[in-house]
Amino acid sequence: MLTADQIVASQKASIETMFGLTHKAFEGMEKMVELNVQASKAALTESASHAKAVLSVKDAQELLALQASLMQPLAEKAAAYSRHLYDIASSTAAEFSKAVEGSTADAQAKFVNLVDSAAKNAPAGSETAVAVMKSAVSAATNAFESVQKAVKQASDLAEANFAAVTNTAAAATKVSKKR
Image 1: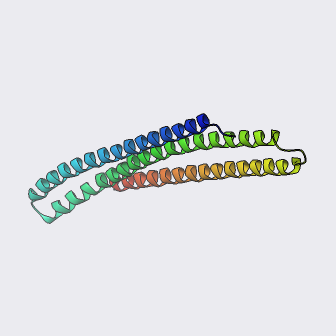
Image 2: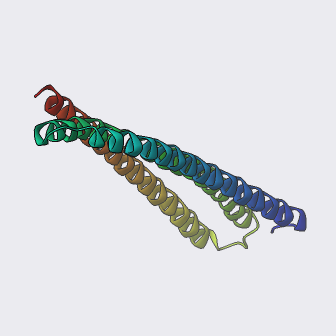
Image 3: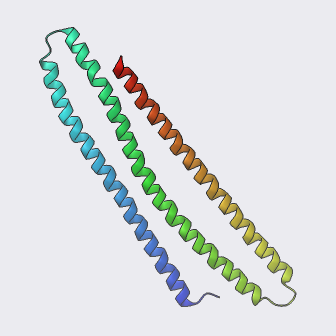
C-alpha cells in the first residue's frame, strides 16, 4: 500500500521531470530561433551583395556566370542549415527520450515492488493469481523493452539516412562546382 509520503515524493518527481523537460524544450527552441536569426542575417547580407553584383553586370553572359556561381554556395548553405536544424531537433528529442526512459524504468520498478508486496500479503490459496499477475507484469515489461529497442533502431536508421542524404547532396554540389 502506498503511503502519503510516497505519493508526495512521486508527485514531486513528476513535477521536477516536467519542468526539466520544459526547460529542455525551451533550450531547443532558443537554439532554433538563434539559428534562424543567423540564417536570416546571412541571407540579407548575401542578398544585398548579390543585388550589387547584379547591378554591376555588363552583359547577359556575365549575368549567367554570376547566377551560376551563386547556386553552389546556396546549396551548401541549405544543407548546412538542414544539418544544424536536425542536430538541434535530435538533441532535444534525445533529452526527452532519456527522461521518459528514466521515468518509465522508475515507474516499472515501483510497480514490480507493489506487485511483490501484494504477493507477500496475499491470502492463502491465491498463489495462482499472484503467479499470473507476475507473469503479466513480466510480459508487459518485455514488450515495452522491445518497443524501446525498435524505436531506437528506427531512430538510428532515420539518422543514418539523413546523414547519407546530406552527404550525397554535399557531394553533388561539389561535383557541380567542379564543372
